[in-house]
Length: 198
Image 1 (cartoon, helix red, strand yellow):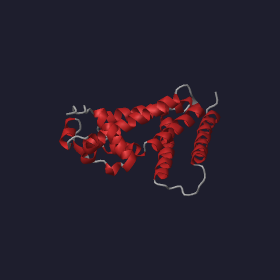
Image 2 (image 1 turned 135 degrees about the vertical axis):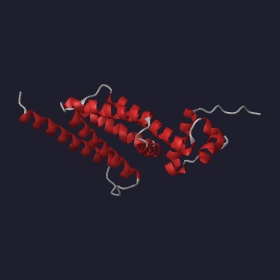
Image 3 (image 1 turned 90 degrees about the horizontal axis):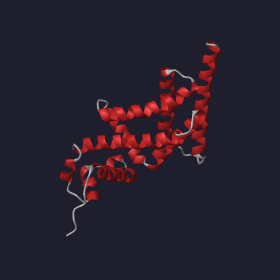
Image 4 (image 1 turned 120 degrees about the vertical axis):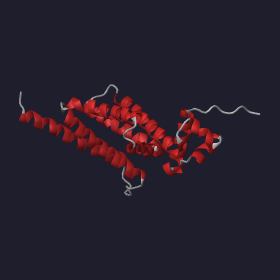
C-alpha cells in the first residue's frame, strides 16, 4: 500500500490555484480540492478554516505571488521603464493565473486580516516608491498608484471576460494607455515646477 501523500498549506494552495486557473474561482470547493489532492474533505480542516478560510488563504497567496512578480520586474529600473515593467508583470500574472488573480479580490472583504493588510501594503509601497521618483509627494503618489491600479485591473478584468472583441493587439493597447498615464504623471511634475520654481 502506497504511503499517503504529505499535505501542507502550500500543497493545498498550489492545488487550489490549479483548480481556479482551469475552471474559475466558483469551481473551488472543499470537495473539489480534496478530490484533486486525493484526500477526504475533513482532512483540509487541519490546514484551513473551512471554505472561507481557504478562500482567504488563497487570496493572500495570490497577492504574495503578484507582489513577487511586480517587485522582480521593478529591480534595476526607474521611472517610465519601471512603470512599464510592473504593468507588463501585472498583466502577465493576470493572464497566466486568471483564477488566482480573481481570487485575490476575495481578501478585500476581510480588511481586518493582518496578513492581507501586510501584503497589500507591500504592493502599494512598491508602486508608491516607483512613483516618488517623479518628485510626487506622498499623497500624490497614492493618487497616482490608485490610477495605475485602476487601469491595470480594469484592463485585466475586461480581457478576462472577453470584453475586447476587436482583433487588435491588446498589448499595444495597454502600452498606449500606460504611456498616456505617464504623460499625466509628467504633467503633474511639470506643473509643480511651474508653480513652485526653485
